[in-house]
Image (cartoon, rainbow over all chains, first blue to last red; front, top):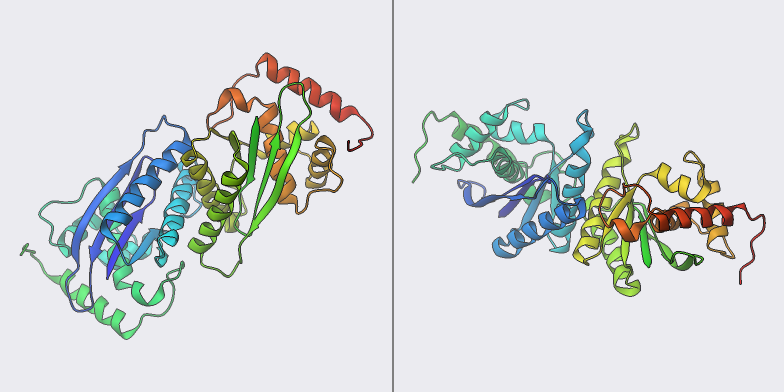
Length: 192
Length: 192
């Protein structure tokens, strides 16, 4: 099961691909960020995001795509661009024939840290540990995309394949969650 | 100058194409609505919108695309889907190599009715008159898309070609606006 996580954005659109199967440790495939210049026309920025993600889809051939769910909030100056980028990402995933799920930021934080209100540094720390990375993924958008992919693996991405990511956990998902919790409890991590 | 107007949405994405040149009456090329089922996954709905608009772009070969600018507002339940659809539309237009502009709803209403707070029926009435249509375009999303295309023609789409649609009107645009105002003042319309 290979999952592409996408943290949508125009200035920085994070993406991260992980491989995982129940009972096995999740493994980093690749991670990166699509950047677009803030002074470029909006349509051109969306096209650049699309081309970046299409490249990732074609090169890494994920089995599923998880996109962070965008909410209307106080910071409306950037939220529309974020929503537009997420729409492009979801459309491209559907065009590639892949199941697409969305997960909320608090679902993602809870999945990798155990706490829905965790900060960005904590998320990055846990992503680094869970995937046994030698370096912390930077920028935060890249780490967030990996966290999304891990969240999707653990919340049962393989069995949902819809756009809402809801549903009670299956036995396999619970097994995953237990394994993840056990892994999180380790105090030191060594890359193998 | 052929303009595609897009009124973005998931349940109904209106599109309308008009031909126009300074000093000539704008002419309807075609108009329609891409509909997607409300119970389909979001990513599939976005893909259906994309495929519908790609078909229009390929068949009618517009010179420019105008998309309604989406604002965060109280009705947040649908605004994210609308923003996502607008992102897809803008990305596809950029991919087709076309200049993309956005216009606000009040700009569009003011362009075709002279009043930024005009109602949907009034917009439909004026679009029907300006384009000398025998029938009122339905649903309102289709009429709104035509109004967007007309707004783009009159606000100087040819000279802007950016995503914000701002800028002082040129002499040609002012001539257009005068012609439009004169046309609006006619009390009866006959299709030729």
